[in-house]
Amino acid sequence: MILFAVSIFLLTVFLFQINNYLSFLNKIEKILPLYIITSAYIILIIEVAGLLNSLNKPLVILTIQLVINCFAFITLKMLRIKWKGVNIKEIKYELSRAKSYIIKYWGLSIYAGIILIVYLFLLYVEIRFPQNTSDSMYNHLSRIGYWLQQGSLKTYFGFSNYGTTYPYNNSLLMIWSVIFLKSDKLVGLVQYFATLFLALTIFLTGNELGFTKKGNALAALITLTFPIIIFESITAQNDILVASFLMIAFYFLIKNLHTGNKFFLIFSLLAFSLAIGTKQNALFALPGYVALYVYSLIKNKHQLKSLLYLSVISTFSFIIFFGGFAYLQNWINFGTPSGNAFKLQQERVKQDTQGSFLDQVVINSTRLSYQFLSCEGIPPKYEYACTKIKADFFRSILAKDLINIENHAYIAESTNPLI
Image 1 (cartoon, rainbow, N blue to C red):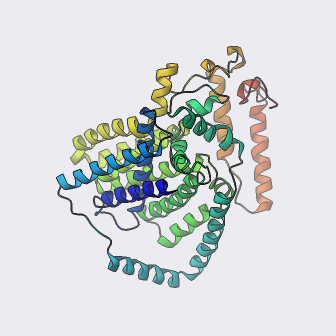
Image 2 (cartoon, rainbow, N blue to C red):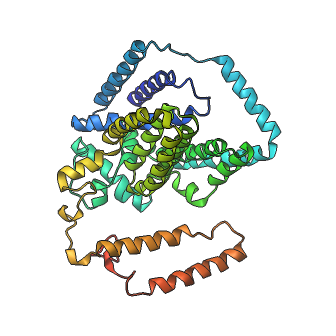
Image 3 (cartoon, rainbow, N blue to C red):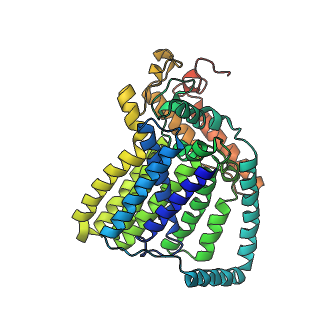
């Protein structure tokens, strides 16, 4: 516990140093860069400890943190950036502003207060009760146990190929507390905080797009009430975490589009790299992200060369350090960035039980389309009719011979489909 407190202290000192670079942002906007930088900081120290085969040695983790903090301090001195302490007057001013907003929008404040109570209860549940979802225990937490046994992030041979090949930024963030506390009681906080930052990003994105602050706040609060968000916010999974990183990436890219500020582009690329290193599904957002990026370059064409140069350097660096560790390891061990389940000793299956690439594209596209066209949230009497129409439409497609949803090739455990 004491060593974990020291680690948190070193992280806090590092963030205070980083805060000196963020003077161009207002108080609320600063929260998002500090969040993604915190995530990158923890991921980096865990990766370095893994490379040193010292992942299960808390003192090595603290030493790495100390080295990074010293580097940040020296950089501040070289750039002659003054250390900014805590301004009590500013804090009092922000508190008075918050009080005035609460009084002005009392209805919205009551709604926010109720949600706050719910999330405080969720925090208690996360700490008090152990993780019990199958995905958390089978994939995301099991690899932490392997890593701690071997003292590194090296590929291991276990019962789940996802554990050793799938992107694992979420597990790198969770293992930080496990290393010091020898317990998984705090692993759910990764998604818990990601949920709160996701809501904050929705609010700030709405502001940036010109919508009313009241409407943006309502949208952010409603997001926190979705059952899927509530139930997953305290699990050791990764869906909300990757969503928060992606949302932040798009928010800062929009800020770059509007202002041409290069720091916003750096934050955006860092957030997107973190998302890719968390879950492969983040790549589905790449076309939209690239389109918005190109539009931003066109609008800020007066600094096109510098933005392109910065983009190449930042993307390469961030992918290497914060997004591509799992992919590089898969490439080294299996010859492909996504890994190769067939080479794992415990999960050998026959090639002919797997669907072709075209079959997988068709079945997954159909499945994702079905999920995307959601009827939830509308009045119940209309929701039933909407669901029935959607089911009838897709049933005619799924009944075709081209898509056989009963095929064991699309079951996670194709050799034992009933387990």
